[in-house]
Image (cartoon, rainbow over all chains, first blue to last red; front, side, top):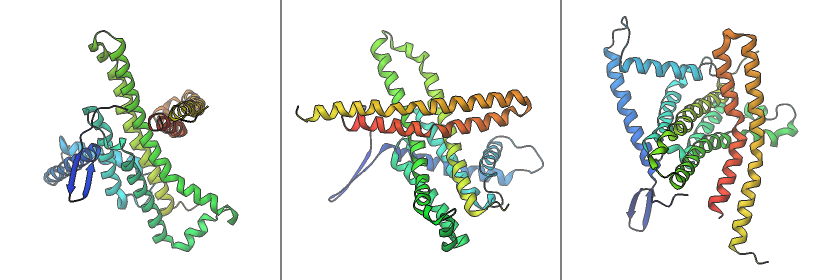
Length: 237
Length: 81
């Protein structure tokens, strides 16, 4: 793709050579910034008078809280408050990491191992919480649902969940990066004045970075909470 | 005909072009979903925001198989040649 060297952190201890890619370093910075934000917001929320209308950082925190409840509330019916911390935190940090590509650094979700980590973590959480709630034998019987002959197909269907979550997130962000690179190269080749490209690229970034990044975050967590809600808070009908 | 690296490069690019035939599916599916969404809003204009959010989510989910094809095509062009 691009032949420019992307900066990374290289650690050499004896014969062990480790290279940390730039997207992981950006993710560490986002985590530190998120930790500072949550700590400061907590201090302000403690001092807030419940009678008066919130403003500033307390208002932003309330809107984030309402957004997360709107995403996962319908799927995890009575266990929403139990799973709110993990889904809320990871949702905010993933949204921030999708939008950080606007600053010109490599965003963490363009790294496939990062997306795979998130998807496999969510999948393991779904499986273990389902097994601890109902027991391993009931989970196995659930996989043999209409006929026991369909057991291999049901297992493959379960395996398809982390794969599709990874590929959907990675593919959308990668498509944005590749198309932006191609259009930048094309404009540099055919237009005489380079500054004419500033008329075209805001729309590109508006669609691929902002719109696509936020929608993919919403879809990732809607699907994750839907499958978790099927295991943990099943609908009795 | 000798099978050297130019052959591999050419075949990889040909395969990438064939993989993107799968771009047909999401185009038809998402257009159908948008049409049904427009029809539903026409029938019940008060529920417009709810219908819009459900439609956008359905469209982004139907795009998944097109993205799978895009990943295979990019992998073939940039890794195999």
